[in-house]
Length: 121
Image 1 (cartoon, rainbow, N blue to C red):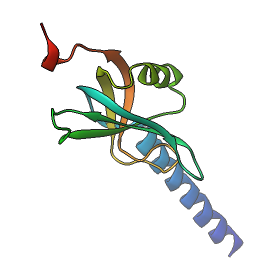
Image 2: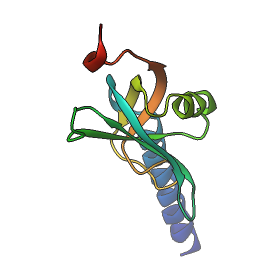
Image 3: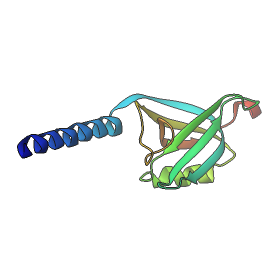
């Protein structure tokens, strides 16, 4: 009986590890979006995560919500610097997420300032 319980517990741990590795390392899609960076917050009660929003329309009707991993310090600093400006972001979409990684499935991997198409000369 002890051997059965040990094997069952080991099986659950192994399946959990494979599921975590799949969610963390396998991406569903990768892409680029641009818009006005309107929000960047560091929020959470149990686990603090970086969450943000980009407005992709003139009236703010199209909002792209995203998360940033804590390990991407340079991306977080650039997002703070570009607050309120037009930006272009590279992102990775995952199949799912865990609460300690972020609220959304979209994770920003790079950011750069971009010229707004609404105010071109």
